[in-house]
Image (cartoon, rainbow, N blue to C red; front, side, top):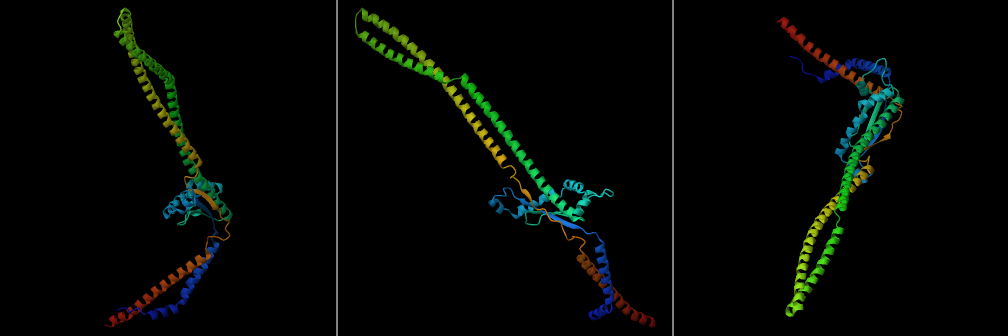
Length: 364
């Protein structure tokens, strides 16, 4: 049976072998410090871009920004971290070594970092290079190009809105011109004023004839009551006149009815054309107002990006972090040395326990 673990014995064992821990930590300190000092220094420059919501100048819209909306702004990270943009930047700033060209993907992972801090409207573009000036210039270039790309996308979307509004206006104008031409042609071929004048004249003439008919009928009644040859002759003439007047009145009535029907149809058709023309005029005015509105609000339908901080030339290197590397090395050396001493302590305890048992077995 092995002896149970004795904490005091374990601590005493570590105290006796403190030089092992000290040697491990000393070696780790020297090695990590030397390696950190020998590693090339790299500097990180950060440019900041603010993402304003659509209608960012409206205070009411600005105060209504939600956490979900802020989280959705992470999509703008793809603008700054696009491969095509970084490839142009790498060519512009000669980031690749002509002798040993590095794949653009791995170079971007080593150089570029794009992040949008949580619950903010800020897009941070960080560039890490050996030359601090080039790092700042590259970060500023990527920020400016990100703003330009976003503005270009917004303008392209607005151009699509404007093109659609222009097509609607052209179609509305063509419809209006067709309705105007149809109304003008109908008015020239089917005038209502002359026809109305003819009807009025016919009505006036009919009224006169009816009055003459009434007068003649009165004369007939008078001649019927009067005897004599002259009265009989006048009676015959009056009866003939009544027949003529009655026939003429019937003709005028038929003519008036026919012309009134024609006038009613023309008026109805004219009113229908006028109604269609008014609808087309309203549609044209609506389309024109829509086009003016789209042009006036162009560029404000999507978020607006603006560089608020182009970054500064870093003075302190971001890597290697000497203190952090040394601390990590010391911690690792301490852990490794303690594990080693603990393993040695357990092995020693087992060996001490095993030797007496083996001696008793040999004596037996």
